[in-house]
Image (tube, rainbow, N blue to C red):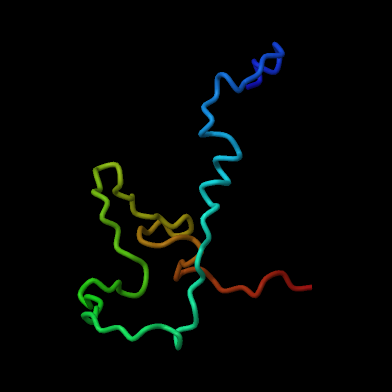
Length: 103
């Protein structure tokens, strides 16, 4: 389109009429019938459809189905204060509790 405009050529011969704005709006031209209030519905005499309770999602974070490889194993954390593995400096049990700078 830009090349046609640069060379002052009509792009109509290169673009299918299907992609015109008129065709796009024509797709949505048939009227949509809004859903009426439920009390105006005809009574349903077909089979009653019930959800499968076995396929209901459980609450909480979903479990990942990703297959892990050797690069995914995390190394254990080592505390920089006491040097013991399993916790960080922030949660070190040997850390003296200070209320911060006073003054």
